[in-house]
Length: 367
Image (cartoon, one colour):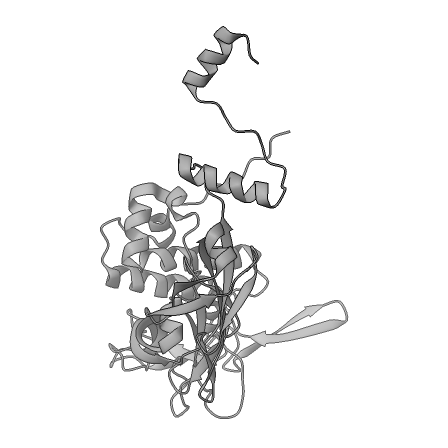
């Protein structure tokens, strides 16, 4: 039995924009999309929730120039394996939360925003200043956050009679919820702002510089106070949660603040000892002494050459020794190794005959 997978819709179609749409067009389209399909505005509507997730994914790709270029060329297949973590979906779910109703005393503080920053291991070693972009709720510039034009007047909502809430009865139970018409306000503007659809809030792309501390690890983060979404008038902004994601390194393996790398040496070097050059995460090279008789996979410790561990401390660098066996030998090398094997009375494979020796053996009847 073949299970047919649901086919993803075109991202441009999801947001209702043309393929040549500008970034501003895409932002504006997603802002309207989110206001329409956010779960808080459609309680209990599973289809709206799925549409919202679909739109958030489309916006994540189309807002990013590199991802959009890749998508335009290869479609959904080109997005496989591409990290979708410029901002997380939960942050998108939350960013419009609280706009659509809910009563509490005093103006509500803005929601927290969350952004994932991808880092190279070298950046973790020294710390780095990064410029990051993320979607953030701001007051609509066109209406100055009022949600209405200058000529607009407040009208009492006829659905709830100005109470801001409606009561639904089911058997012996009754449920009170925000009025779906006025979103719990009790009234609405006669002429709402078209830019923000009367909400007074829009989503914009924020750009800020952040100081990422040295030694940070994947899934660790820090909070920037007052850099999140705007709140209601008179209330402070939310905070920005910056979460790190450290990419895998081609040379070093990380274990907390410690690093592990490999040093490949020959059998004579392992037997007699040697000095080898070891790279560090800062891009330097240090000389490490390998003792006589070191064994394959033995690990040597280089103190203080790992990652920052806080309070001026650093982790260590561990060097795994790999003894390499030669795949081919010169005649002299083979002679010396056979002599060593003879001295050690070691059993080794017989010496291979040359082509000329094989011919002579054939005609002489030797085997």
